[in-house]
Image (cartoon, rainbow, N blue to C red):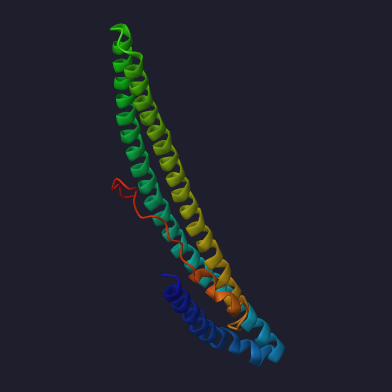
Length: 194
């Protein structure tokens, strides 16, 4: 996604600025001389660069909206899964607690009650671990969204840098910084997809 629009817009800027400069500024050379022509060319190029940047910003804004929509859906799916799982574990915890109360009321053996209390603690531990998993997963979703949005800001800054440097190789040694990829466990062990 990143490379194609950049190359397209950059080439568009070069072609359009060159033609605009020759068409609009040729009169200035004849009337006022070379300095006036060069000033006109610089101004025309700057205006074309600004127009290219506006178009590029519009494209990035659309991409930003798509990213926000995608991550909102992912967050909502994760929150729904968290709610469902927590509710199921809460019911299990309440049932187990009720079962222990019944054992106490019926004066069951103390070792039986201790066993059921240990089982209750297992459910509570699972519930706590599940909550932590979903909380961290939502943190990851938020961090990924933030990273993608920041990359769009960086892409705009790179586009502007390239246009303002008139195609010089400024910053080319930094181009590979965006080629890294993060890998996360794709799904929770129970098979939820997000």
